[in-house]
Image (tube, rainbow, N blue to C red; front, side, top):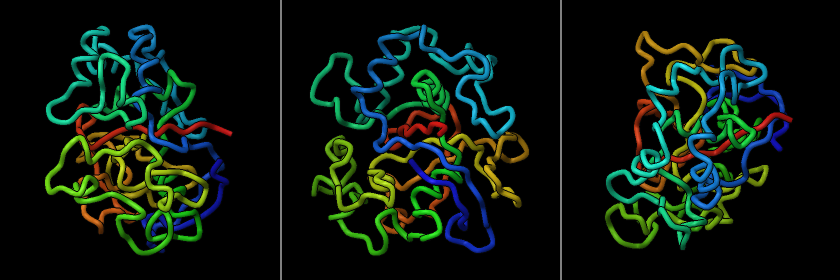
Length: 258
């Protein structure tokens, strides 16, 4: 549980915000947890309006996204999950069960959270949880950054260069826990948020950037991942990708309503 409250987005007093209480997954979605969604696919595709934020109009699933943006069938989904490079998905259950699932588009991430009874968090909700609310933490665990708290720079395995071995099982860095018990808010995978990436809304009471176009062509990502620099482990990091992107560095964390 993340209690509601007020804080400054990106630890900047120019961007105050208020969020209502919500639930946020303690861990990033693992391969083992995601496998149930895959096994149910395509029945697990969301219906119109699923996965909506209860206080943000028009935030649920748009059926127009289905044919154009979701894999057509089970085999197509499995093919997409095996994206180029170091993907965590395996077609058969095995040692990767506790690794965070990567290589998921924004649409697949949204579909999973909706199927799982939740939704994608807004960028503001995620930032509130990572910053410890009005504690305005520089890093999810507090201040200072080192390898005891988080893996970064593709050095998690102690070898230069990014590889699958740099992606740890969820919860592997207990010293990096956030205020409310959330793990891997930095140093695991970056995580899709509900929002389009763009300037912060001026007024923010359970807000999100819901309008695409006009320069907003990417969806927001939250959290520095295992390949980013130590500096990017800060809670105020803002970045994004095109929603159809499948990246080795991007995964899912779902939110739920209290």
